[in-house]
Image (tube, helix red, strand yellow):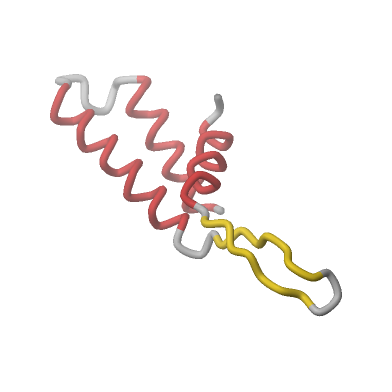
Length: 77
């Protein structure tokens, strides 16, 4: 999965479906992602922090670079 795909997935998973009423369409489901981006950033920051605590290959590890790229993609959403 690319960093962009993972960023999209995390923001989607932290989004909240809300049922709203529309005069034209009746009851519809609206996905509220207003706070989802912030929640996804916190999750990725925690993963990066844990990686630093558990490994000695801080900035050279492909996995840490992946999560840093995911963080950038979330910020760009």
